[in-house]
Length: 305
Image (cartoon, rainbow, N blue to C red; front, side, top):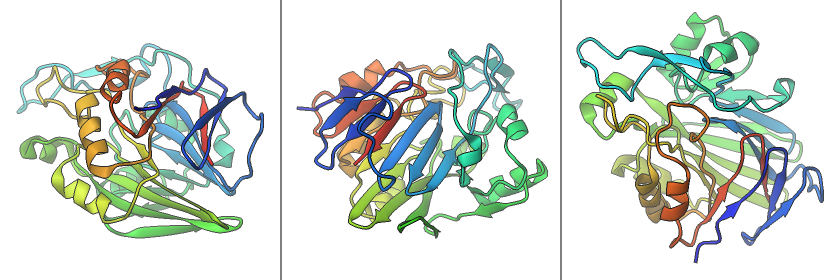
């Protein structure tokens, strides 16, 4: 039976043991060493991933209020030849507090406005180290960023930590199961992480906006067992001309069946009006699974010991 856990009100820290049993704790209580994978979810696809003195920021979207993100609306019908209407998307809560100065590098799955917005563009230093796709490297360079690395699918980057290292491998992210729509949306990256320090070893797959299509799953499976799966959910686009362009609960269950991760930490849901499927659908769908489902509040931190 699945041991699903709702890990946190904002500001709490959940400690998860090596055997997979979550221990709910208040922030800073019983804090572990830095040699523990720590993830703070800031909403949408934005996380802080910290391990042994290195911190990554993912897909930064910092906008707040009723017009948090201004972007083409994938949830409306439109003429594909003319393109979608631009529409503000609200953030339903506040952007959680975090220390941008602690960030070592920013990882971007793709540069659609809900993954790199105007507010993030204004706040992030132009010389911040960034990792992304080759097309998005060009996009970011035009915005004035100067320290950008394109990481093609299958290639790796290694970041030394205080007592170990983090290896990041780029894998494809297919934003639609429709080949023609995929051409419109462009390529994206998912990232497979290996965290190593002393005797500590954990792996994580951050999916980006993808579906569990055969070629993506085969490339991820080739990288080895997964301790933590971080899927983008939300069911975006199901009411629009592009069709579904982010996973829903059924897609995540399919991915879990294929990859067999130990734990699942869903993101890319609830934060913005863009997301159509409520997270409780995934909670229901995961009832029968052995993998533990960690549903955390925006601003909360989960630690995988």
